[in-house]
Length: 465
Image 1 (cartoon, rainbow, N blue to C red):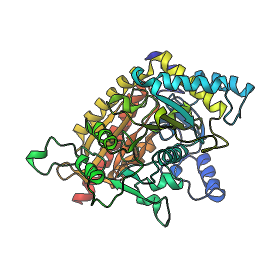
Image 2: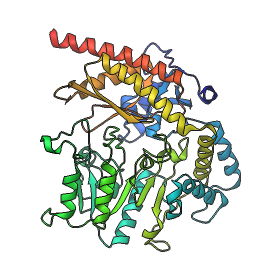
Image 3: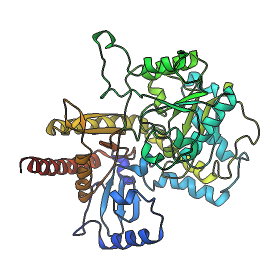
Image 4: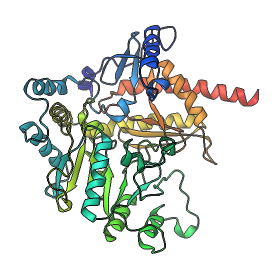
């Protein structure tokens, strides 16, 4: 779509310094190390200091241009600095910035847009509440609402799931790296396996048509000796993000919801990363027939990086009264205006359909790359939420995190940024801005081809030397 070109700083990487990071970036990275807390993480693998950004291109303080397939961790759905959205922001800033939970035309208009983008047959069933500014806040609110509604306090979460860093959100996040040295989190959380088509195996010919993980989940809820009392809710991502951009097999979500509802258990879908047209549809659950009770949202809803989060939930589970869940910065008026602008931009430019087109184009190119590399086990995803899993051997599927670490470094040196994740830290996770152009994709693929060739040559040399 040529009309999207103007929303980008350029359409290619441009590295002008002899080395990366450049000298100015080095100075700022050094200062950061001295005065900012050691929990800083992203600059350790992408060592740059950022000056400006537009669309899918980031410029560092040394003048280098990077293709951003990281998208601010899946936040910048309509790109960095989108001027269409900024007009809404500027207008709102001049009128009102902070309004707690008082009604404003700005906020009520956004709620109407959110509900109006749900499937027509269920729109009247849902309402919206705003939480604090981050996705973790939305998760905490969803858990609280489920517990109040059911009178129970257990939560079933899923292996590979990521839901945030606050106490409750971390308790339902499976990665034990984040939980090391923490001895106390929200109690009564139990994990069950998430459907992982690439790695799940049927054990007998008879169960080849059985959806992996469903019987285990059903047993947990229905077997009086499962050791797990009936929970308030199950909580999962309809497509796992940090877990490796894993798309579960068809029918999995529907069966989970059916079994949960048959056992009077609420269903929470974490759409913080998969939502806001990341997969083409407004929310990922709309690509299925699964209907959740509560949906958490954040990240891309701010359009260009403005912090916002909240819940979309069925009216029938309304269980909390005035001030039962509060937050000083819930529903910031400027973030709300940015969200309205992002909605209008997406509707005007038909970005939902464009995501399906450009996502398929990117996937096709990555699958071609897979044909040239014995170390790519699977390319998967939907829309602009894509995972590339690296393995040492396609037959054994042994994870190869060492390879992707070098691959990421080689891509960085050529001007391409992306995140690595997965159950074994061996998955290239691509969550670029949804407005990424075909030319930008082409240039990113060229970088990947060059980088993977270098990595493969180095690996083979090390093996046979």
